[in-house]
Image 1 (cartoon, rainbow, N blue to C red):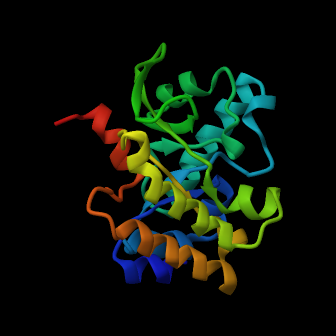
Image 2 (cartoon, one colour):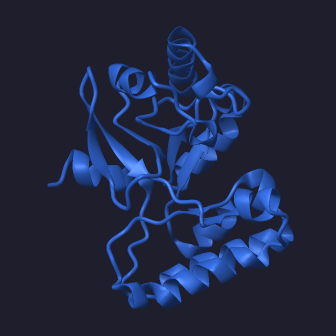
Length: 214
């Protein structure tokens, strides 16, 4: 999948758990060298923040920052909870520990600022219509509906007035990192590069629109 996006000449948002940063340094270095952003995905995928108390959430945030800083050489400023299931304390703790944006939101089409007790943080909406995890694993489809759904959205966007909105194309290494699925992943990238009205961006750049509008 990294080869495919490199060939297409686009940058992607990559999310890694703290345990990945601690154990697979070579992978992070390759992602970084290719010009992609690397963002925190909590400590481990099986630990859902919504079920954790405040102290545990904060402890794992600090541990994750240290893992990224120690192996990757740079701390993360963006965050997404496993399954986007943050806790009542997550936003406050993210702001307290220097995070600037999070993708734990489904309630808007465009990024917006959220005020916390510490400071403001950008909420970047996350969409799941073209997401390999939901399409193929949750609903048991073959890979083709991934691009079929995307094609329908692009072709029909003008029919609903072509509103401004951020839209995610999401692929997981353990889901779409296979030949049949990689074919659809590449086709999706080709598809979104074709229209002149589509801006291919990253979550980090979207957050920057409200954090630093200049």
